[in-house]
Structures are given as structure tokens and as C-alpha cells.
Image (cartoon, rainbow, N blue to C red; front, side):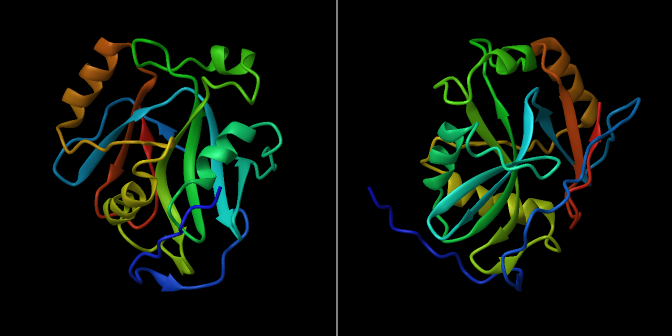
Length: 193
């Protein structure tokens, strides 16, 4: 079955599709940053991955750059439906529980083809011939939302609320934690609480 790939407007810098990009890893800190310049996301408990979409093929790479497409065929199939001719997406593979939390131990026991495995996308590094890494995270996330909307790839929402409030809510729900990013930051640097 073929899907029409929709090209987005030209944003970012025109560039060839890069290979694997070393991910920015979250750093643990004592307190969630506060103030208007921060956005916060849920910290998922799963496998960090990078999705490469090019030439009608989706590949799944681990955070160390190993090609695990063969281990996560369902995720590759889900990613193939993303509406872009080429893309590089930073995300996580998770197994959601009924209460909305994620559990790494459950993910480890699931086989890579399990229908329970869900890809979660939280950053868009490259899109349709353009490198987006120098754009603010908030803008990259807006483009990411557009291309994953209507697919089985879950979009990781950002919340522009006070950091302490976000952290308290995450604790109340029993979530893994919070990832905080500067809203205008070009790099996907993060703090984890």
C-alpha cells in the first residue's frame, strides 16, 4: 500500500540527509527549571531511538547508532506512515500501561513485533531535504506534530507550565519523570528530574 508523501514548506537549512546523529541525552538535576523560557515533557521509560525515513524506507537506530529495524519491525512500519519524503526523528519506543505510564521492564519482555510497542516522537532533526537542528525546539515540534498526526506514532506533548507544577503532576501519576527544555533553544538539550 502506498501513501502520498506530503512535502512541508521549506524551513531549516537545505542539506543532504545526514547519517546517525548523536542524541542529546538528558542530565539529572535536583529541581525542575522554572520560568516562561522552559517547556516540559513527560519522561518516558523506554528505548531511546532515532527514526530515519528516506527512499520509502524507515529505519530504527538505537541511541548508540545500532540499526535495530529488524528488532522493531512494527515501529518501522508505523514510522513508514509518517507524512514526509525524508525525516530524522528523535524519540522513544515504549509499552504504555493502562494507566498511561510506561515500564522499561515490560518493554524488555515484549518481542519487537508486539502490537503493544508504541513509538513516541519528541523531536524533528531533519525534514524533506532540510536540516532543522538550528531551529528552536518549539518550531521543530510544531512541524513534527504535522507529519505524525494521523499515524500510529505518538507525539510527545510539551507543556508551557511552571516546572514545579509539572513535576508534581508527574509524581502524582507515577511517571518516570520530566524533561525540561528551553523553548527557544535550537539544540535539543534537556534536563531530567
